[in-house]
Amino acid sequence: MRRSRFFLFALLAVLATGVFLVLDGCSVSDKKSADTVMPGSFPVIDEAYSIIQENAVYPVEGDMLVEGALRGMADVIGDPYSTYLSEEEAASHKESLAGERVGIGAEITRSGGKYIIVSPIKGSPAEKAGLQPYDEIVRINGEALGGLKLQEVVKKIRGKEGSALELTIYRPDLNKHLELKVVREVIPVKTVSAELMEVRGEKIGYIALTMFGDETADEWKKATDKVIKEGAEALIIDVRGNPGGYLRAVGEVAGSLLADDTVFAYMQNVKGELTPLVVEPSEKFSFDGKLKTMPVVLLQDKGSASASEVLSGALKDLRRGFIIGDVSFGKGTVQDTMELSNGGEMKLSTHKWLTPKETWIHGKGVNVDLASEQDKLFTEHIRFSTDVYAEGDYHEDISYAQRLLSGLGYSVGRDDGYFDESTVEAVRAFRMEAKVSEENIMDRKFFTALREKVESYRKDKENDKQLQVAIGYVHHLLSE
Image (cartoon, rainbow, N blue to C red; front, side, top):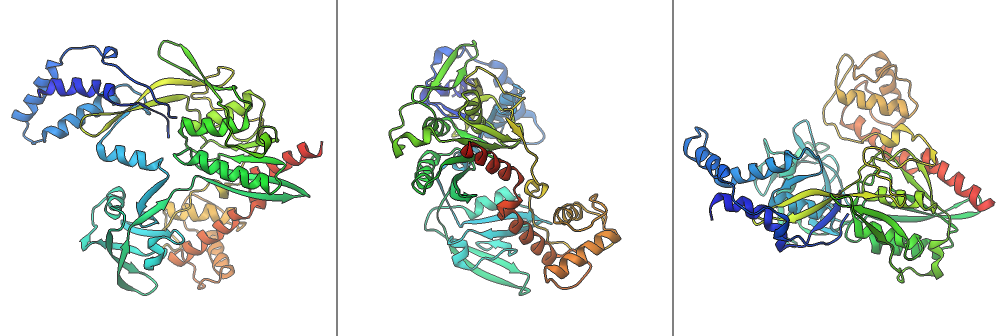
């Protein structure tokens, strides 16, 4: 096949596949036809391809040139949500929204050029094999990891279910290397968590959605069934930090809360034509439709994007729920994800989505009904550090620690990353309270204790300012 024909086919490949509409992280199916693409060839691409292949002093494989051209076509659109995904990237993207993954079940980070186990998931292959937080992965199947990106290390760890992985790890607490064998298993990806909170004699269902993936709708049903069966009188839905996902998933969640045949959003194509997205009958949600009538409060923040904004926009416009927190991210476009003949995919923004009142929230976000600022310890990204810092040092790790210490109530005079005398005093006081060896340094033991203290602080719902505001509002509704 001539190269020009390949590029034409890359554009036409949509006719052979169903289309995924992804609200980045919504998804509906559609069909494309060859009539939507101008027929013809692109001889200039042939020319450039031949010139580079025949004359470039730095040789480049033909497939790499093709990949570069595909990326270039997506990049020139100037839309951060339109992009070309290689076969490998496309697989990772699908996996991120899947209901399960195959792996060892451990969070890994890169710190100081080292690949560190943050924590193994409870009951995972990693935990069964004996992996512990702060273990450093040195070799995988006998191969050293020097110079690899974190993404490449993760790729080496993943594999087929039932296959074995040989890990050489360095354990700082023992000051020795260990050889561990881990068998890869299917790791479920849970996107919904729920609990019943009893506050001031009232029962409130709290449900958090981390994303809208393959299994979210089913998980949502189980979660809502659980809290309603336990006597929930109202519902708090938490989509803080939810980056989005599949439209079908958010559609089912919205459908369980809204009256049948309600328009929960609109899709708008390039011609400006609107297609209503209508809630379908939701027989699978039981309890005599209680979910459609009980008071609802939704918590969102600036990290709530895309599909989560579809939900908050619908609840707000239809006056079905009260929104508390911060203005959301503001992503109002929908992407078609189309397979290409080389195994890759072209993810392209093809529609806008609008709220039931036909508002486009792109770049603006969904406004809240009641603004509430969150405790800074809840917005700080918790990370690992394996380095050692002392008075007089300057580093971002020190700034990070200063912010956490200040949030925990220790007196720190600055948070610019300079290890001054006030930081020394705060570190000493924290280490004494945390029963870590009394030294005036930030080391692995210090960062581990600091992380555990902040995680414990976050688990206490009394410290979650936005949640407490939501609970207070629900109490007001139920006491009316």
